[in-house]
Length: 189
Image 1 (cartoon, helix red, strand yellow):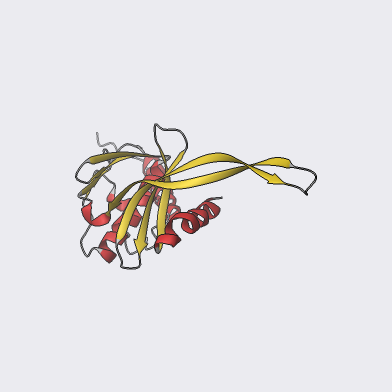
Image 2 (cartoon, rainbow, N blue to C red):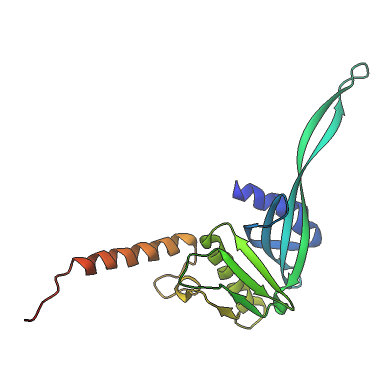
């Protein structure tokens, strides 16, 4: 489903303006409809972040032959960019608290924009993409605060930055904790 959504947004929103959709996450917004935080790269290597609003509209279409006029209803998704920023203008990405599983984070431009992802995993996935794009296209590191760096930057063992690697790291830490809790502790009297 997500690949179909990516293709649809690429076709409707980004390809006509000669941009390539790199990453997107679904976010929670107070207004009705689905919302996405997207990052795209233009042909001139300009990196943009945008909030995309998806509204579902019903249209009535006439069909049939000359004699019969029937109408059928069609549900259409309408995508539009509600807010747009340049990655160059992003001053800081604040994860709020690295020790809490919180899907909310703050994007500091000239104003602060609060974003609530649908999951903490989605938040980290998006920030990893921003981090890589900032190094690649802006030639400067992205200013991050209150994130667990183990999930942002790859180490030599974890070179793939996907969500599966994050899950593997969590499992590795859990196994270590279990092993440590089973070790006998010598009691010197």
